[in-house]
Length: 142
Image (cartoon, rainbow, N blue to C red; front, top):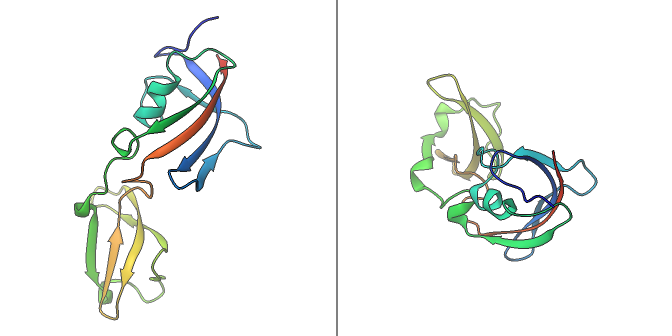
């Protein structure tokens, strides 16, 4: 059987959990995830873990945050005066919003904190700073 190698298009089923057991994503009930190994389409740790697998292989991999979404970066948080936020925009902590960068690109953020005078917005990936565990099964090498 051939082993998955960089440049191969592969399909896999997966379940991703945090170290406390909380599931954050899964392909269960959906088509397998399809991507090209080594292309940067998925997090580096998972890309590396799938390399060398053969069709039908199953394994559990522990991926440190440095090989997933990285450490949380305090520079990706910004506190702005509430007066700069239009009144119709929800500002409850946990609310997901999209800002527009000066170059026109959409930047997803989460309201991290809200006081009467300020709103703190966080542009870190929601899984930044988290070590992740994936149960994976290689379904196909296309």
